[in-house]
Image (tube, rainbow, N blue to C red):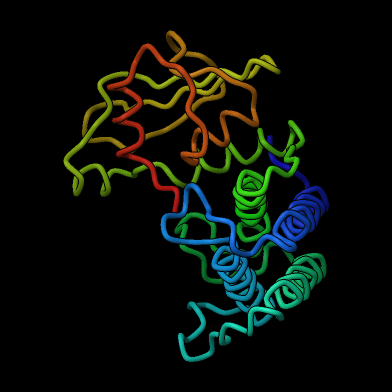
Length: 244
């Protein structure tokens, strides 16, 4: 499945607002899965991410914005307000944009604003979880949003043939992710040891990892541990996928 544009933008807005609520008055809390960062650092990171992609979409850039254009980190007391303004500006730009307009992205097969809109959902959702985890705040994600985020990751962030060759790694067999709150499964496999990793929306083999769609999304991004009987296969998957 692929979320509609308005659903993606609504999810970005929802998780950005939840992120802001979680970090408010908690800027010194450490971030478990971002070593050496506290929540103030995470706020600034996500502010920069929103600025980066908002600038590309608004200006229809065909290359990343020059580093000297990056805004300076504001004073601590202005951090959250700067983030909130930037999140609102991001959703406004994406709402008004032609999703098929060509722009630079890091994914060679999707060089358009639609890629930015879809990918920013999981950027906001996962960092919302980071903030909630750091402060004990509530975090939840709609099943449809988590499902689309999983499928976007499997489409865009698995090793292609060049990556496989450079890394000198391969899967020893299929990796099967099974959602316990839906009837959905995803299988990641290679046609041969030097091929790109590809996925199909079904279980082609025994389950490697099972959990709710939300748990599987967090597992993919290294935020949750889920039991497996195939730890070697999981390690292979980790080594052939990117969460940057």
